[in-house]
Every structure is written in C-alpha cells, then in structure tokens.
Length: 92
Image (cartoon, rainbow, N blue to C red):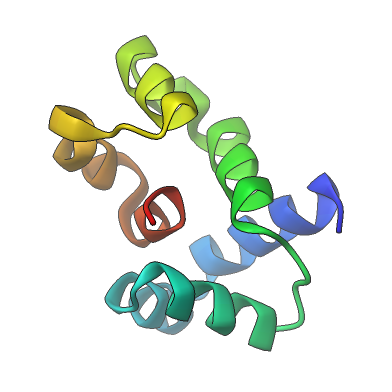
C-alpha cells in the first residue's frame, strides 16, 4: 500500500496496548495477519521502514544497519527493548 498506511499501523499498535500484546505474542506471519485484520494493507517491508522512521532516533546506527541488512544477530534484545512488540515485523 503506502508508507502512510504503514506509519498509521505503527501508530495504532503503539497506541493500542491490547493489540501490541497480541502482535508481540504472534509469529511474523501471524503479526501480519493481525495488522491486516485491523484494516492495514501493508507489507512486512513497509512495516520495517515505518518502524525505522518512527523509532530511528532511539536506535543505534549498528541496530539500524542490522535491520536494513536483515541480520539482527546480537542486536535483537537491544532493539526489542526500544520498540517492544513491533520487533516481530523485523524478523522472518
């Protein structure tokens, strides 16, 4: 869809604790199903880009590089601490 829809989806998750918990407990495919069920027609890549846009200031350059490269490795716990349940959109 659009970057705007993905940003709106991120904002919805951040603002809806129950939804954030359900998404945080899901696997990557399940998280995408949940967010699409909320009316957001977005791809995992669009969600990844929106998360970086919204939370980029909180992330270290190495964490951003790991997200961009798709290899979160040693950075996963640090990223989870900063973006919580949204992490599920970065894996898979």
